[in-house]
Every structure is written in C-alpha cells, then in structure tokens.
Amino acid sequence: MLLQPTEKQKVRFETALKNEKNFEKDTTALRNYLKSLISYSKQYKDPSLLVAYHSLLGNGFSSFYDRLNRQSADHYLQAIDLAKRNKLKEIHAWTLINYAYYLYSYRQTTLALPVFLEAAEALNQISPENMVFKDEAYKRMGYFFGTIGDNSEAINYLEIAQKYAEPKSSQLAAIHDNIGAYYLENKDTVHAVEYFERARAIAVEIKDYLRLGKVLGNLALVHEGRGEIDRALVLVEQDLAYSERYSSDNNTMFAQIIQARLLVKKNRLADAKKVLLKAEEFAESKDYLVRYVKEIEEIKLQIAIKTQSSEEELHARRKISLLNDSLIHLDGDEVLQQTKWLADKEKYNHSLELMNQKYNREQALKRAYAIVVILLILIVLYAVLNFKRKMKIRQHRYEKKVLQFQLDKIKSDVKLAEKSDKILSYKTYLSEKNTQIDELNKSIEQIKSSSSFYIEEQKGELNALLTSHLMTDENWISFKRAFEKGYAPFYHSLLKNYPDLTESNLRMIILTKLGLSSKEISNLLGITADAIKKSRQRLKKKMGEKWDSVVEPFHPEAEGKI
Image 1 (cartoon, rainbow, N blue to C red):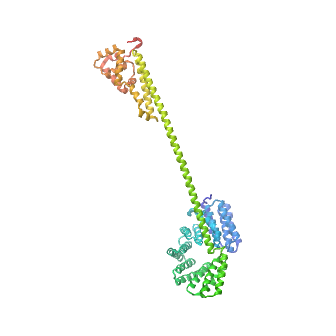
Image 2: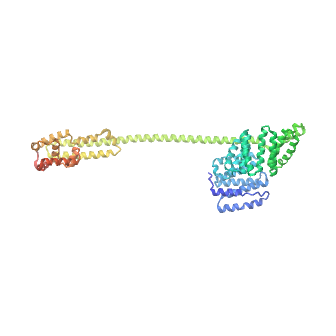
Image 3: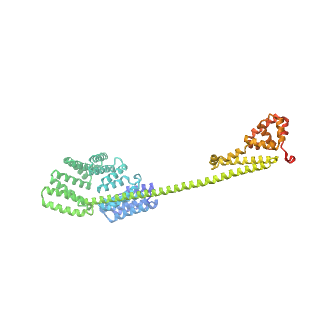
C-alpha cells in the first residue's frame, strides 16, 4: 500500500523538478548539475530527491536524443520503482505520468496507453488537492486521452487541471485552448469558441503570443467548419506569423498544414504547394511526425486530383501507402482508434472489476447481516428461554417461601389449639406471630427491590399472609373468646370494674397483660409504635393508679392452670 509523502518531501520534489535546466547535447553537464540531488537525498534521508534525480535524467536524455532512447526509459523506470518502493503515493503517480508523456510525445500511443491507464488508477486513489504538479499532471492526462479520441475523458482531466493552474498564466491559457479543441472535435462549437476566447483573452493580457497564435489557428478551424474559408485563412496567417516569430517549429508546421488545406478549398493550388513544401521539410526531419507527413501527402493527393496530374497522384498514393505501414507502429488513425478501443476495454474491465468488487462486498455484507440476524435470533431465543427459566426459579422460590410461612403459621395455630389454657402458650403464640410478621415484612421489602417483584404484585400471597397474622376484628373476636375461656376471672373482673372500656381498650390491656412489648403489639395490630404509646397513655389516664396492677403480666409458673 502506497502512503502519502510528507509535505516536506513533496516540496523538495517539486522544487527539484522546477529547477530543471536544458543542457541540450551536454549530458555530462546535466549529470554534474543533478549530483547535488543525490547528496541532499542522503542528507535529508529523503528518497523523493532520488526520484527527482532519475526523472530529470530521463527528461535530459529525451532532450538530447529528441527520440525514444534506452537511457531515458531506464531512468524513468527507476524513478517509478523508487517511488513505489518508498510508498510515495502522489510522487509515484507523477512518475507514471512523466514516463507515459515521454512515450506519448514521440507518438508511441500504444506503449503509452498501459502507463497512462496505470496513472489514471493511481490518480483515482488520490485527492487532486494532494497531488504534486496538480495542473501539469491532469493536463498531460487530458492531452493523451484527447489524442486517442476520448474527448470526454480529456475534458474531465483538463477541467481538474484548470482549477489548479495559476490565474492569467500561460498554463491556464493552454488548458482553456485544449478544452476548446476537444469540444470542437465533439462538434460543440459553442463551448469550443467560449474556451478559445478565454484562452485568447489570457494570452493577450500576459503577452503570450505563441499561445495566441495557437488559439487563432484553432479559431480558424471553427470558421473552416462553418465554410468561412476567407476568415479562416486570415486567422491561420496570424497563427503562422506568431509561430514563426517565436520559433515554434511544431506549431508552424501545424499552421502550414491548415493553411494549405484552406488554400486548396479556395483553389489556390500553387500557393498550397509552396506551403506544403515548407511543412514537409520540418515534418520529415522528425521520425515521430510521420502522421503529419501523411496528412501533407493527402493534401498533395487532392491537388494532384484537381490538376489531373496522374504522375503526382500515383506518387502521393504510393507514399501514403508506405506511410500507413510506418504508422502501424506510431500514431496513425488506425493505431489511435485501436488505442482508444484498448483504453475503452481497459476502462470497461476496470468498471467490471469494480462492479464485481461491489457485488462481492454486497454479498459479504448480506452474509454478515444474515449471520448477525441469526445470532440475534439465537441471543433473543436464549434470552427468552433463560428469562422463562429464571421466572420458574423465582416462582418456585416464591412459592416455597409462601409455603414456609404458611406452615409456620399453621404450626403456631396448632400449638395454641392444643394448649390454649396455658398463659405461656398464648405468649408463645403471639411471640411467634410477631416473628413471622417481622419475617414477612422483611421478605416483602426484599421482593420489592428484586427481580421477583412482579410475582408478589400478581399473586399477593405474602401480603395476604401478613394480613392473616394481624389482629383484625375477626381475629380479635376469636382471640378474645379463647382468652375469656382461659382467663375468665380476670376478664369478667375487668369488664365489671371498667364497663366503659372499648374493644380497642380491651385489646391494648389484654396484649399488655400477656407481656407483649409496644413493638410486638404494633406488629399484631398493624399500627405504629407511636399510636400504641398514645393509646396506653389515654388508658392510664382513664384507669388512674390501678393501671399498673391491671396490666401487670401473668405469672404462669405460680398460677398453673386458670
């Protein structure tokens, strides 16, 4: 995986390439000039400077030979390898573009295609904002795709390039000019003229007359397409004047070819021949300009046909045939078309690969979702079963606790029934009741704060048991009857001496007489200890001095049975 180089690395790399010098035929001077990059690379431990070193050597040998050469290729490939091995993502993308553009410059479009496609893939992984030489990188990509006829892709790249080009610069003028050219090839003259005019305005303002000439030549093509040949001739003559004045041999040749074609349309055949001779002289001096030599011969063929010169026609046809053979290996129309097909095929394959990757990701996600859903179902099922199991356990514990309290109550009731004539039996019975009430209250409070609270809320068996232990009116009547039977003398004497005693007064006196504490009485009656205290105070006031003797507890060990 390639990483993003540091900002310092990118700055050093760009600075090194911006300081490029053309030593023309002196490669020794070139090597000496670039030696410092090796030293700086060691000093800063920065491999990007070694990448710059090999990139500049590749450019230098290209300038020296002015054709494809082994030295340039070796250095370009070393630069690519170094950038890749050192994981310099943006710099690696630039080295690919630089090498591909070298191949493209010498019309090796077939060789350049796979390198440009690799560069395109690299750029797809990079934000344009982070790219080195943003405007130049995307401009070169645009030029290549425009050359092979993929004008839409070319425009896309150039539109990115124009965002990063300096305003009012030769670079921006060139980008606008070429966007216009690709719109023109797409027969969109409205956008074409719009961009040509933008380029012309910048060129005039910054006095870039060479670019101005190229723009005028492109505008000549617009007028040619409209059939305005005279206007087109005026513009192309201006293009020629600027190109010759500023020694642009390439553009002079392009303008001459356009001019000759226009002159043929005006039937100025002799003038066209003269212009073609000049263009041909330069075109034939460069191996990589064979395509334009063929274009010149095609215009010559038109002239021969118009002048009915069989000899010139035959000569032109033979030469065109030979040139077609040469162009099989360079940038003839068939090669460019084939290159575009290959590019389209590669893009299609890439799109197909992306679709497959997307499909595989979607399938993986679906499988993951299915696994997650199954796991969730299993978790929910486990949770439900576990919850039910815990509910059963809680239910069992609850019922066991209720049963235990019920048994304790029954035991106490049975004991009292068996020994109801004993004072101690009553005291034991009431004491046990108090203990059971305390335990019940404690259990009820514990359940309220536990996960079993809902069971008591639904069934209420513990609260029902608690109520059954309390001295309700019904329970009191039964208890009073048993007490009256067991302690008749005391009971009748009490009623005789205090006939105005209420049932509540009797309860308080009898329970106190049996030796129960305020807390125990509070539990039995289900009222607060303060209420018990106030009730006793009222009775004491009512009975006066006799209160203490009346409520003095029984002494069963002295009395035995009553």
